[in-house]
Length: 258
Image (cartoon, rainbow, N blue to C red; front, top):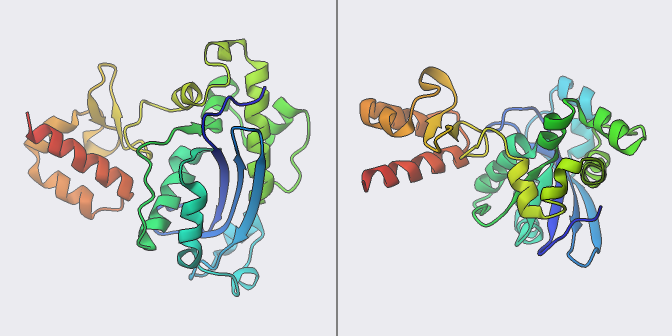
């Protein structure tokens, strides 16, 4: 089933120095950009992360320091990349929790604002886990009937993610209610009613913002900010993504207006 697009959507995947969103860096970025008329473009770019690539990361994606020593840094391509993503919805595999937040941090370090306020996000992993509970390699085999060669190559993973989503739409009768509509897919592929991308702040069953981690897990954000004045400052100085900090600040401002 083809996607019903009102604007372009970008499927993308990152290979990185590690899994710490705040501190790790991108070593490879691949994207497949789909236009409403069905036209597709794809590109892969390796990047110099300006830090050593740990052996355990190289063991996964097979990219070494030598491979990227002469490649541009993220900052050097940031403006061009921002233009590529401009006006697009975004899709990926585990992208809402990892790839998108890490990409946002890279743009912030480059002095650019990666605005997500008017975008829709489809996380193919979330749809897969809601239906089957497996990995991308298994998803590709299950939905597409093929082995995923070059797994953990950014382009192979990106292309496979796009193919898996289209196969999911063909496979599940349950998806008939939202069909191939990107806005409904984005809603279905969200997890835990996240307010921030990392899921540190979510909505409870009544739609009230609550913390989803640490000593205040399950506690209403408004009540915590009122009872523990230092918690807000601790989070702003802590090891959280800028998106989480921005969401918390926005909520704090909203609460103060009541």
